[in-house]
Length: 364
Picture 1 (cartoon, rainbow, N blue to C red):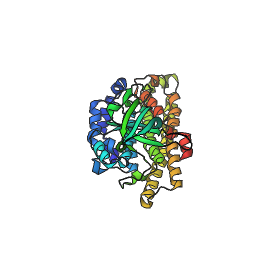
Picture 2: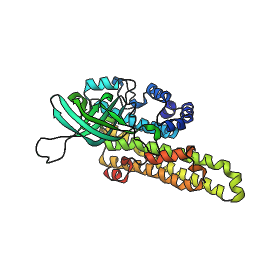
Picture 3: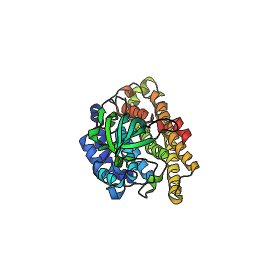
Picture 4: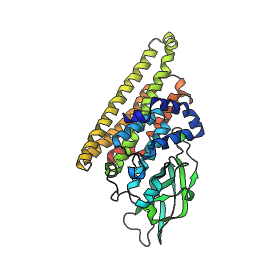
């Protein structure tokens, strides 16, 4: 499979060897970023014309899962970073060419409309503050949504527009203090009264300039199909590490409580079966609806709902599977320097994303 070719076991081993060092530093190593650039993994949804590595959404989902299984912060950064390629088809052509052909091209930003912008000759003056911008310190540019200020009455729906900001225009507040995904640098970004020319503003609802099917795929299920595999990969990693915690305790536990060891292994195996079943449904749904979408040119409403439900269910099952195994693992799992503990923390942080919650499931 493509995911295994891109992220082979040797790479997984190197990433895991550095995982706690990256967590302590709160950042990826330069070597890891260089590998991402070399493999163009932030460009999975960028067209060949812009030196991207265009990948069908179902294949990209499997890459995100394997990356998260290797390390949670890596999986998260790839899902977030690759997702920014969606905008390569909506930015004006000249600007897309300039911004995305950089081998290090990476967007950090937010879809929350927490900025304000005022129309001026040739563009806008924008100010705002956006939280949780993963990859903020090494992004080559930033995107964020602003509400456009109106003259006179504020009746009707507010106008929201997307803006691209250059690093020199952005202040980074290093406030990402989450207990998981600590190496994602998901800090707050701030802009204050910066001028943005018309050529660096866009609306993702406009007709995409490129023909690849991913650009016409609805944005909510696109996000769900990107983030659910991260949670699946972390759930699998946690259960694997849980088993590694239990196996060395066989003699000790059997001597004091003969049934404890077998109960723990049975709980882990049962949890893994549940996760595998939900994962299988997720990928079957994504594969079949994607094939129908490519063939028909549109994602049917029923198919969109199926994708949403399968994504949210897979993420929920990953968390529940971890919860089912956790009480059987003894005190060792509480130690922050254990891989199982890190996977637990990363899993719960990733699963907290709003697109995988109940409201997103209902909206899908």
